[in-house]
Each structure stands twice: as C-alpha cells, then as structure tokens.
Image (tube, rainbow, N blue to C red; front, side):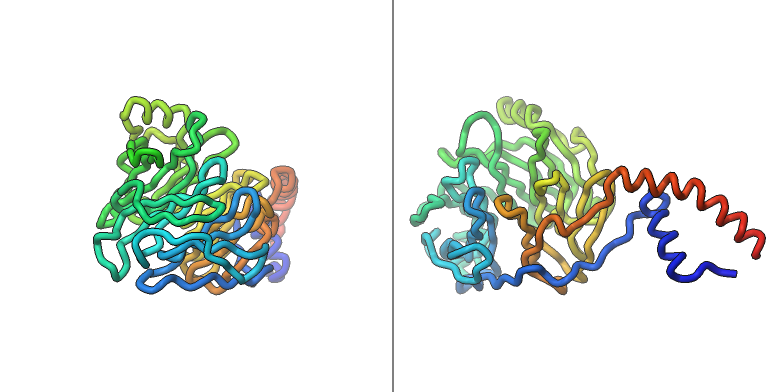
Length: 342
C-alpha cells in the first residue's frame, strides 16, 4: 500500500525542511511589476543598470549615455549625461558610497573597436557628461563602492581574463585611476560582489569547474591587502557556498539579510542556513533597489521584471525545528506501517 500523492508531497517537503533532502526549488512566478528597459545604444551589446541608493530610481547605462527613470516603476527614462567618445559596449555601473557619483565601464568596445575597450568613466549622479576616461582596467566586469576608510572615491572591481578561466578583485581609485589587486587567483570568471552587515565582502566564481562557489573576506583584511599591495589568495576566504547553484550574475543582501544571486537557470536565495532556487528556465541577472526592497530580474528567463524581495520566502529556523521534531515522531511510525503493509 502506498501513501497518497498529497501525503507524499507533504512528507518530502518536511524531509527537505529537516535537511534530509535539498530544499525544493520553486518556479519563479510572473513579476509583480512589469518594467521595460531602454534599448542599448547603437553598436552596444546591451544595457547595465543600478538603483539610486537614496531615490530608488533606476539608472541605465546604454553605452552612450546614462538614462534616469522618471518615476518609480515607470518605463520612461531621461538622459542625464553623455559618456565616452561615442556609442560603445555598456560595461558595469555603480554608485559611489555617498551616492553622488556614478562609475561606468566600457566592455569590449562595441562596433567601434578595441580603442574603447576597458575604459572607465565617471559622471555626477545629478547629471553631467563624462567624456574623458579616468582609468583603464582590462576585462573589468563588475563595480561596487568600496567601504574602505572614509573615501567616496574607492571601488571594488572584479576583473577577468580573455578565456574566462580566472578573475581577481582590485580597489580602483577614481581620483587618480590607480588599481590595486586585493584578492587574487579566483578560479573562474568574474561575478558581482556584495558587502554584508558584518563588514565582509562576498564574491564568487561565475564560470568554470567551480562555478557557484562563494567566499567572504573581512574588509579589515582587504584594507591591509590594499595598504600593503599584497593581495589575499582566493583560498584564504571563508567558503559560504560550494554548490553549483548560481553564477553570481548579481549579488546583494536584502533588508532581511538574505543573499541573492543570479545564475544559469534562475534566482538563488541564501538565508536561515537554507538555499532556495526560484527557477526561470534561462540565464538570469538580479539587481536590487534598497530603497523599496525590490528585486529586478532580467536576462533570458521566462519572467523578467520587479519583485518584492519579501516574496522570496525561506522557512524560519523555528519552523524547521518544528518540522524536524514532527518528523522524529512521524517517520518511525510511517516506517513501521510501511513494513507491515509491504
């Protein structure tokens, strides 16, 4: 005699909650809010985005200019400044710590060729042009304001190589264009980066045999690496995740302290010691609006748009403990009945 399907589903879910099985993957539903992004400029491959840290508006770097969202949830955007010497490939974009500046990178140079590749520019977040490059970092892939000391001009840069086989993290100074390596020998392609409430930098492996691995590094250790120009080795970081469940295509902490990561098949969320994947059937990027606690999902998956971060649920530890205790009673009894019925 077999358990009915509904009983079996509950049984497997409780096993997952108790840690006997991996947590069940969810299917990403349609977005709460649809959002149409501006198209890339001529010769650019795509657009890059960042949410304003104080206004929650979306800023879009299209390869030729930066466009600012006219209102929350609006699909209307207005240019606030031209960047570079003409349309190029839109690389990473990030706000400074105080939110007053935007750091923008060129990717491969678009159809304009290699002369525009790897250049880095800066414009005021309030608007203005940035036609002269402030630095050059080959294969830069991600930017993040670096909370080191009191400076508003330092940024973490995750840069890779031509074969996507290795990457590193450096600290870029927007005042003089200097770039100092602080984490070396990452065994795979670049990922996004995030800093948690405990002053740890999280970074991962975006492609390769160790894809999905995430490690954390204390900012105090990174500060020492920067001051001494002696980068930390990748293996010196604490392993946070070792499974191939993400590619670091976006990495951030929400208001609850949950870590979100984009990946090859959806959105992965880490919280309460649990990993939950919201499958989207395609490569997915995630970005975060800290003002409104919203998650922007883009990429090639089934559903793209804005979601409340609170929609991505993970069981609380108390619920897991209750389920584990219930299983301690239920499972032996079920096994006894099953043996009797066999």
